[in-house]
Amino acid sequence: MAIIPVYGIEQGGNSTRIYYSSGGVTTDSRKTGTVLQNIARYFGNSPKVLQSNYGKVLNCKLKCPYAFSKNHIYVPVKVRSPLVKKDGATGYFNLAAFEGLEIITPDSADHLVKCTILLSGGHRIASLFLPGKIEERINLAYSVRERYCYLHEEFSLDSASPRLNQKKSSINIKIKKGHYFKLVTEDDDEEEEE
Image: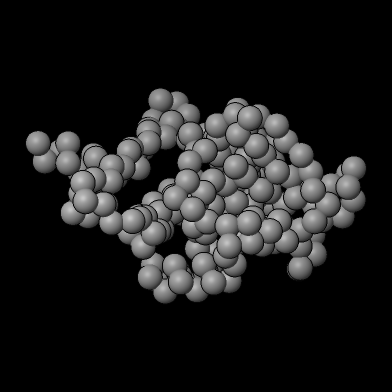
C-alpha cells in the first residue's frame, strides 16, 4: 500500500518501511528503489519502462505515477531530506489506499513536513510536498489509471467501450480549520451537467 525510505535503526542504513492495508508495518533493509523494482517485477514490468511509457503520454519527465495494475497505481511523493546524495527522498503510496490529507501547521516540530497523507489501515505518511503538489500527483495518477484501463481492459460484448462504463469518484480532502478541497473526477462532471 505504501513504501517509504527510512534510515532504519533495527536494519541499519538506508531502508524501506512498508505499510500494508491490514494496518501492519514492516521494515525492509533494501533501498526503496529496489523494493519498487521487485513490486514491478511481480507485475511483470519495470519502473523504467513505466516511467518512459506514461511519462511521454502525460508529459511528466520525472516521478510519474507507476501503474502496476488497475488497483495498484503508486504515487510518488517526497517524504524526507536525504543525508547523502544517493539516498532516496521519494516514497510511494497506492492510489487505491488514499483517504485524504491533513495540513501541518507551520509551528509544528518538523518544519519541513507540509502535510500528512492519510491511508487506509490508519496509516499516516508525512510529506515534504505542499498539498497542491500532492493533489497534482494524485490527478496524474488518475490519468495514469485511466490510460492503464484503456490499454489493458478486454473488449466486452456488453459494452462498446470499457471507458464508457468506467466510473470515477471524487475525494474530499479536509484541510484544518474546516476548509476542504475536492479532487474532481468524471462522476462529478456528469452530476454537474444533470
